[in-house]
Image 1 (tube, helix red, strand yellow):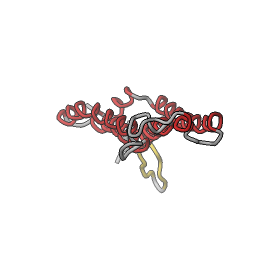
Image 2 (image 1 turned 90 degrees about the horizontal axis):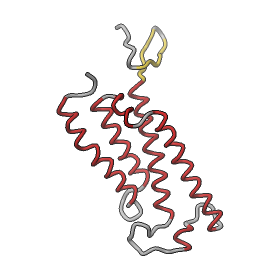
Image 3 (image 1 turned 30 degrees about the horizontal axis):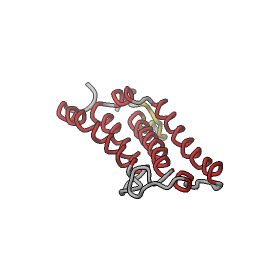
Image 4 (image 1 turned 90 degrees about the vertical axis):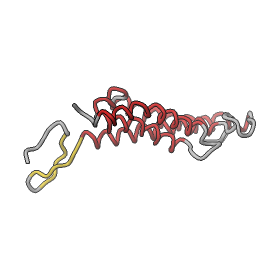
Length: 161
């Protein structure tokens, strides 16, 4: 049986959705309250890291595979670049807030900041998937000393000590 105790697994099942939704909230309302794309992405990644810690890496990789995380990482970066390039095409300047410039929103509303919310979403996707991948790499690999040099091995392979 992989993972932690039954109590930890039960609590993790209860709170993972709340952590994920809180990360989405922080991402979407980051231009109105403290937060934003980076903080929201870290919180979203923490919901998947909780799955790794409580259930083992196999359970988390069922939800989001390594290839999907890599694709989301690329999609987040491309979205961010696309928003910046749209500033040139629509607003005349790199990364200009063309939505706010052409159609100012009402202060303190969700869409009042124009392209900032879109940038926050792109950054949250990028940061969340990158942080998840870093943690998966830490969960799968470990460094052992073989003779006078160090080797990285997968955790499924046990060394004789």
